[in-house]
Image 1 (cartoon, rainbow, N blue to C red):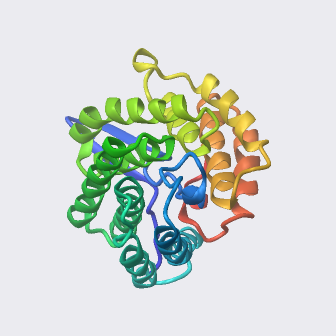
Image 2: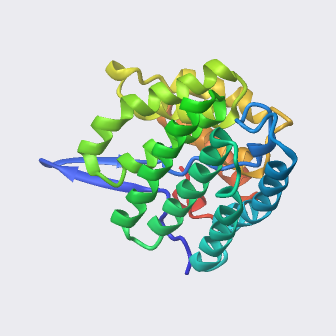
Image 3: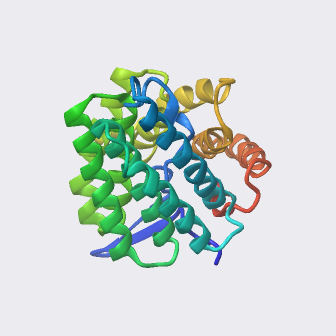
Length: 267
């Protein structure tokens, strides 16, 4: 099964059509789990081995999801394998953080099948686990995962969910950046708020474009961050009437993940 149309959603209410180029819906998971900014510093040897073993399956699932070339069952199976390792990590902050990432990606995958209700359960669990991790030990990455899960959850609840959750997502992504101003995914999530929100609610696509222009020049990004940064900047350019530049960035993004449905929705 392919993940067609996974990254765009429309809501209609009282005659008002709100089409979201939902660039925060599936904020990309990266291999940052072993970085110091994640709550995985100071693990004992047994926990470290469990994390490394689980990350092999997790990274495989993440890659399959973004390449968009394999059945969703293959993604979920790799996530189940990752969870079997992460669930045995004795450090609570680390284990909850890692399993939050698993639940977030499981929700994304299930959402690709059209089952919003089941996907929403995984997004809620991801938020809960991220919160639990933060209660045990603060980290930029745990805040970022919480924001990712919240942005995914709200779009399964329609306009009411967006109104309810959007301020929290902005707060959580900003909190991530306080702890780590260089967190690429948190920069993307925060920038998307500036792109999609009305001016009265803090919308500023020009400011978002400047942040994203600086981001995509960095040499420390993985393929998903490079892809997501380009698609996000394309959306900002489109808002600003810079269509030629947006199209150029979409072409550049398509060279990274040509089968990803975001390329089809790219401005």
